[in-house]
Length: 335
View 1 (cartoon, rainbow, N blue to C red):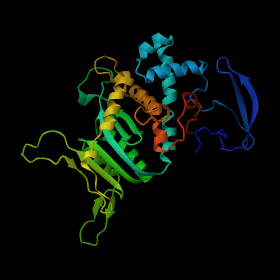
View 2 (view 1 turned 30 degrees about the horizontal axis):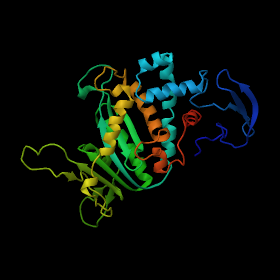
View 3 (view 1 turned 135 degrees about the vertical axis):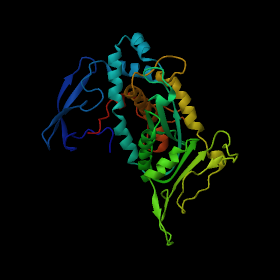
View 4 (view 1 turned 30 degrees about the vertical axis):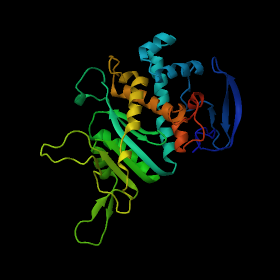
């Protein structure tokens, strides 16, 4: 899978040649290509985020950079002299690249991954109790590279966790050794166990036991006081049964979600919908998810992480070099 392929989008043929050129009002010269195999014609911008846009690309990038660094929608519209509708449209176009880049990440094989899981919360549309809000955001981050596998929002219910951990099961299929660590949220392990498990036959009578797949470990750091019965919970726990051939040894000091907690603090600065002391609520769940998808793209593939000093996708081994903003707008959607 080539992110910047110039093959025919209809038949994926490489038998493509430049047919004509045309000049745009603000974005220079572009080419109309012709496919000799299926006799179709397509432009450089076909099925990309900038298809049909007349605004200079440099202007769009400047506006979206401000948005991904924490500037609110109204403030960005005032500062750059563009309409809110245009900014929202540009963000929607960019957010639709997430399935393509996620698929590109899932085709790679990984030797060992350590995933930290956590949630953060914001209000949606108006001030409601936390239990009724659709602003709960689940984050699954790979520890070493800081790559975000999941950044999805919704009500804090089983459906939100199932969607995130279903994606994690696809990551497990591409990984020989995966460890999931959580600060206090027991549902990670239980839902993952329900979705992804193996039946172990040991030759003994009775129903065979279910275990996590070989090479998968789940660890929980319990928080809070002891139970009412007085029995103290273990501080570090494996909430579900693991495969007998899996190396279950994990040092206690490694069972934490500190890195994803640091990302949560960063997200509150870089996404205005997560500000604690303002009324910049997202108008709906879909609009909140739009901003999260843009943050997912920029964090994973564009922005150099301040700790690792490289782009997370490069650190994980998905890319050789990071993607520029200009290249991001030339990637075709998955058709």
